[in-house]
Image (cartoon, rainbow, N blue to C red; front, side, top):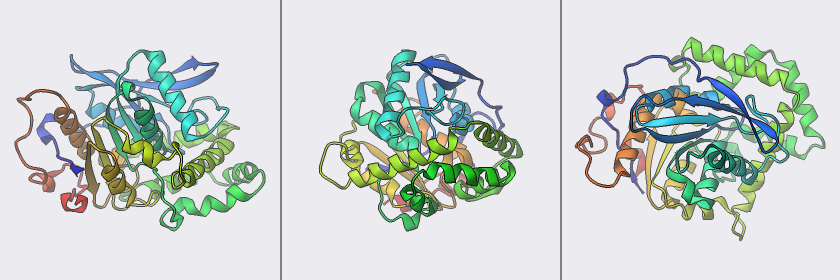
Length: 345
């Protein structure tokens, strides 16, 4: 493991707020997977795939993908049961990973630069470990890899729901009691450390995503069953056997960037450093005053770390490679995320 470094700020596009990606439904293996495209703006862009977290959607990647479009030809999928994708039969890490693998194979774009946030981080670890031929580099943002102290997560209050027969119905009832505006605000407060960093446009998009959930009768069941599958994967990871996410992570060969927020309220903040220690070719960036979705909260800082990962993992010398040491430009990170390289030690 080494500290992540930042690509120079001047190599990023100017500050702007891109609109949501255009999306399209694609029938894959008998069900619809919703896909958003961020077309490349550079001539030599390489394929990238973005995977959202529990309760999120492909729209969570709009800003980061726009910043990286000169280097990466991006696609993001809604996992089964989330966003605008149809429900799946199973809501486990291997099942979601299978959908990601099938999409890469179906699109014919592999190997890809793979990105995962939270649940999507766990899924991406599974894909990178089991199908290394499909992954060029791996970027994990607050990956939901195993931890057992659920007192360190707001999601811990959901654990009793997993023990209740037909807990999905209780979740659906609770969903119906909250106005979409209230739910959107609660989701933002849980995921973001500084809400002033989120534009009004992004807030309205989040509200629209909540309204989509209200119209999807399968959403509550998908959420509860996915959370149950995630907790089960955590427990298996501390038992002998090949399905441990930590054992899978230890076998990843792709160059990897791990990003964590020091004010993450959903995943134990110790998970990101542990992930970077386990994955052999890894770089760690811990962000002070940032929450669970750094790609939404401080996208320019994350983009700079990704661009350095791409340069660092490209064979041969790069004339544009930054000459400053990690941390030399930290005070000017551009998103006010206050990157602290010392946290990564």
